[in-house]
Amino acid sequence: IDFVALDVPPDQAASAAAAVQQIAMLSLPPNGNQIWGCVAEEVRSWSWPDGKQLSTWKNPNHQVTGAGNIRALKAGREGTLVGTRDGRVHWLDPARGTSRASWPGAGNEVVAVALCEDAHLALVGGENGKVRGLKIPSGEVLVDLAADDAAILSRAADGGRISPDEAV
Image (cartoon, rainbow, N blue to C red; front, side, top):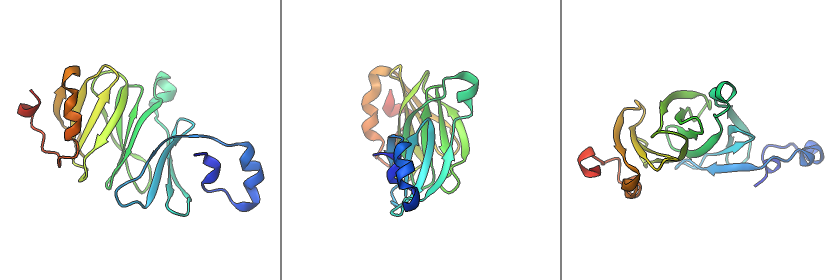
C-alpha cells in the first residue's frame, strides 16, 4: 500500500504520485473506524473508509538516541500500542494520536506487540526473545517470560487471564 492512496485531493494526485511513501505496517482497531500505519518513521492514523489523515506521532526518543524507529504496531479499541527500537512500548490515544504513556519493553528492541480484545493486557516481545505482559492502561508488569517461554503468545486472546503461576 502506498501513502498516495490515502488522503490526497484529486487536484494534487499528480504531484503526490511523485512523493509516494510506503506504509510499513498497518493495523485496524476492532471497531474498524481507523487505519493505523507507519510511514517514514511516523505512526499515522486515517479515518476509514474515506482515508482522511487524523493524527501523526513520532517517537520523541528517536532524535535523542537515534534508536527510536518504529518496529511494531497494534491498534485497539482504547488505544494503539507502538513498539520501538529503543526498547519502549508506547500507548497512543486513538482520537489524537498522542502518547498517553510509555513503558520499558522486555529488554532491548521491541519487535512485536499484541493486545487482547478488551485492551487490558498487552504482550511485548523483545529482539532478545523475551516477552513481557503489561496491564493496560497502568503499564504494570504482570509477567516477564524467558525466551524459551514464548508459547505464551498464543494466550493473548484469552481475555487477559494470564497469571505469573501459569507462565512459570
